Image (cartoon, rainbow, N blue to C red; front, top):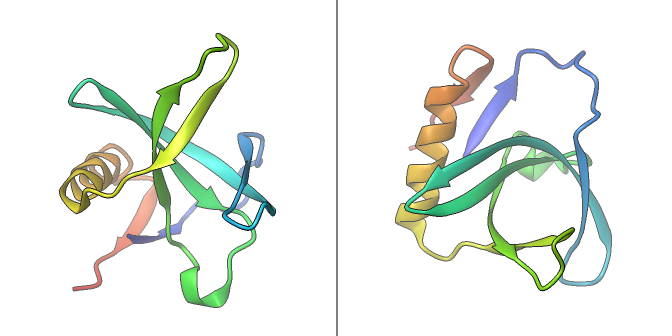
Length: 103
């Protein structure tokens, strides 16, 4: 899932900090919230990209927690769901991003 942002000068004020598998903090720019089959998915762009994953977005499922003020994000294993959510994101933002198809 690759794309180039045509508006790189935009303020990065939608920052989410998550912990990776090793407990390291990773910053993401929040791009969108997509609703699909009664579930919500966040589309995030890693801020500190390595060259190998530059332009790739991360899609995580939103899960409620016991606290009303918090929600958690879990990875999505179903490739069909990921593809569908990404296609919805691409359609919604087709004028803002230059998507690159890698088939």
